[in-house]
Amino acid sequence: MSTSTEQNNNSWPQVRTGPLITGGALAGAGVLLVLAGLAVGGLHLFAATRRWIQEMDVPPSEQARIKWAQAKGAAAAGTAAWQNGASARQGAQT
Image 1 (cartoon, helix red, strand yellow):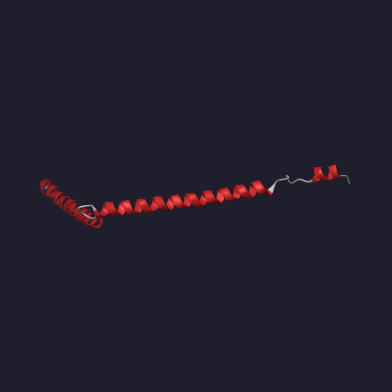
Image 2: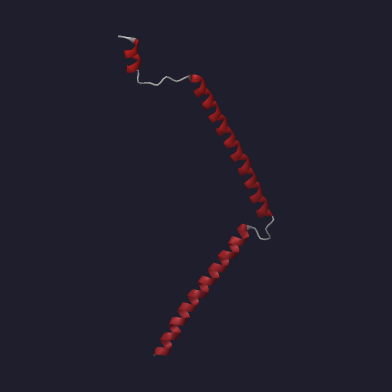
């Protein structure tokens, strides 16, 4: 077999390892920079949200309790109005 035949049968491309190693190292460094950026941004966002909640007049947990009590009261009032309205209509029809 001649060398030209061996070169034509080789289906793998000829690559140099230097640029591949450099590209992999740069990609790894980029991933580390992205992770560092996400960590810094996430910590800042967490701290800002925590500070915002602490500055509120009514904490979110207390506000949720108040809204829940309002919803229960409205549901009870609606139930009472529906029951009283049905009996009042029945009395008027007879």
